[in-house]
Image (tube, rainbow, N blue to C red; front, side, top):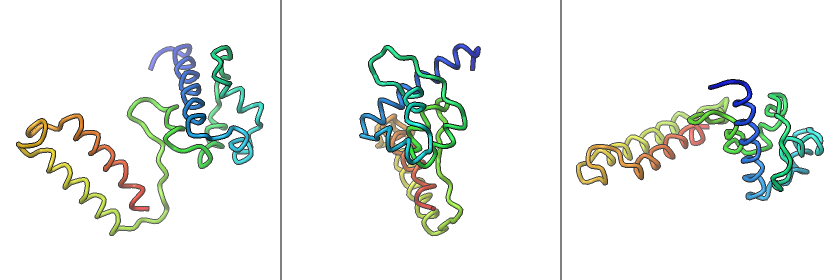
Length: 143
């Protein structure tokens, strides 16, 4: 991925992106502090106010672990490299729901390969977005 200095900068930038997204969704840091057990002042060091002056402290893995189940997975996923996501995997599997979700994905994929689709037999960007959404939905529906 690169040298450690670059990785640190990337992670700090992503922590700032996380703060912007939490603010956009109205997720209060005080509530995150209470639910995660991470002190409020410590959270502020990881997610400083968006005044552009404060450089965030690099968040340790222990804090990321504590934020699981408190901060939505898609926001925590901002810390990961492109193409990676944090997903909750249930201990229970509903095979009927899993089969229906997979069939739904496959039906949509077949529609994308029709000659009359936007890119013909290729998958157009709009179809790719729909397919990715259906694929990402599979674990949630099967749980």
